[in-house]
Length: 84
Image (cartoon, rainbow, N blue to C red; front, side, top):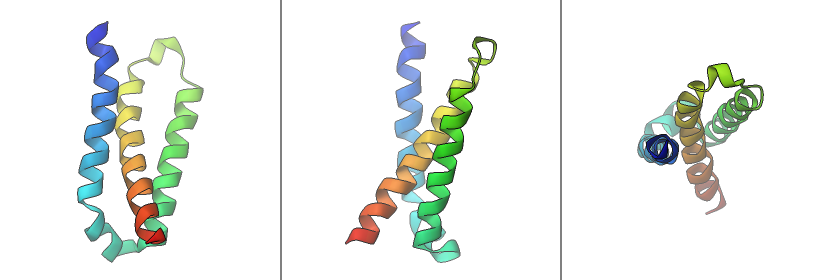
């Protein structure tokens, strides 16, 4: 139980770190504003999936943790980049 409890934040932080290291390539391909939009859409869809999740499909939480981590890395890093 405690391993599963610690695995979700680990997946979120690791995915955020990996996605934030790939931002410069993504900026060149789709631009900063579209990167921010993509991160927002991915995060919103992940939260929507989690909202409608049933206990039978609780394993989906681990996949959604990766998507939430990627979206948070994209949104936070791009938001700070757009402000400065």
